[in-house]
Length: 130
Image 1: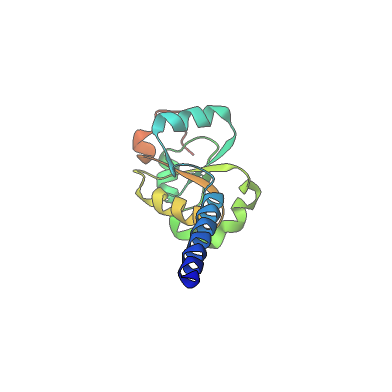
Image 2 (image 1 turned 90 degrees about the horizontal axis):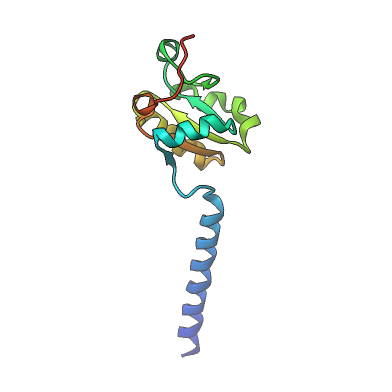
């Protein structure tokens, strides 16, 4: 009987540990923001907007003052994001698919990142041509 209680207690402690550990890793409740939420964030100037599209797409139109690191180069250019480790990074692409992958990757390695849901198609804020 003592052995059964020990096993139950053991699994309970392990479950609580992993639950607390997971909640510490997640800094945000959700991993995406809508276009309107993105615009509110953009106007607060407290975040970095990261464009993971190609250079050609970025030249056509981009969110002003955003950083361009194409998705296929992201892993090799992470050092460029080190200064933004304590800021929330809003990741965007054309439709939200590539940026969703980039957001997942960045969150797994400790960055505070959120995907701009719908990408540039959902963006109603300012744009610029480079």
